Image (cartoon, rainbow, N blue to C red):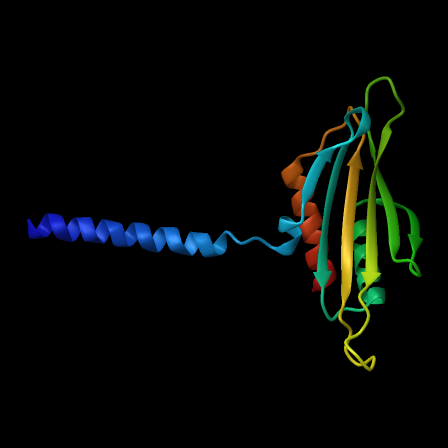
Length: 155
């Protein structure tokens, strides 16, 4: 009987030790928490996320975002450092057409400084990707790419 009680208690302890840390680790990054996917007009899929990145200047964040997009093979259509906007695209291949562009926009917003201009509060980075009807992208793949970009900006 004592052996059965010991096995039962050991089993419960293992379940508890397995379950409770998983609850704490289930907390995802702000990028993942803020990620949304919605359907737009004419079958368009729109993916969006944002994250506040403290103690980084808008100039540094803009440069890192720009370089990340270039490394990942995006074609930069517009880059306006003053307004913190980067507009990029990837060409998709669809039957019967010359291809559709899948635009991605990055917005870097300056959150100002914490007083006296000495330490920046940081920036808010917003990423939006729009996929035209007829093209497809994995939601998990888009989320991972967004979060990789934001992590690269934050580094």
